[in-house]
Length: 277
Image 1 (cartoon, helix red, strand yellow):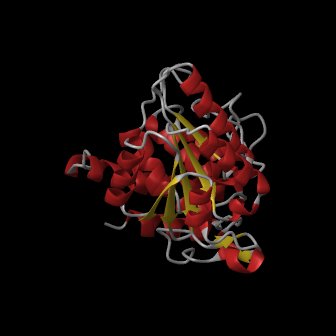
Image 2 (image 1 turned 90 degrees about the vertical axis):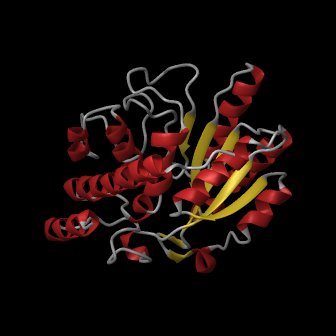
């Protein structure tokens, strides 16, 4: 198993910080959006796009690229910030988030946004599409891998478990799903709304390889992705223990920041905090 080297780690950390800054700025400019669950996945997004995945910003539809599906589509600011940082489109576009006649809508749109592999928003549908992509890859004897991120609140959707059953049955070892387990959804604590726990045990029951990690520890995340590649007979789910609003102390662990935009003054303060060395 290859390890994350110091140069890679430094790059991913810097890009994750830039992604978080862009998330805060974009949601502020839009005056709406979902900062909390976008900030919590910045580390895995940075690692996937700047170390792990085979993608080409100059050729977004490259047939042999790795695929990524943001099943928790409301966290689109994280995906857009990552794609812009990678060079799929100008970072200037981030200031037009959720604006009519621009390419970055409130949820990912594969028809108009370069680098988006699947339109998502209705929870549960993204992981289902990712399963289809993975099965197609196996049928076509392709070597690409499929990655998808789900929210822990999203696991309350029955469609997620239909997809899990499908992936386990077809032994989709080219599929790696990540659960953003920050414990909070728009209505509060997941255990008080409709508890999806225990997460790992449920996926294991559907014949998934289960790995639990600190979702902000780059070494643990990288090792989990590498371990998933070594599995030959089942899909892998990486249950990431994360902090909603990670990086902005005022947002961290607060359900109230699930779908609320910062004010201009808050944005300035939050960006300064993120840029502190």
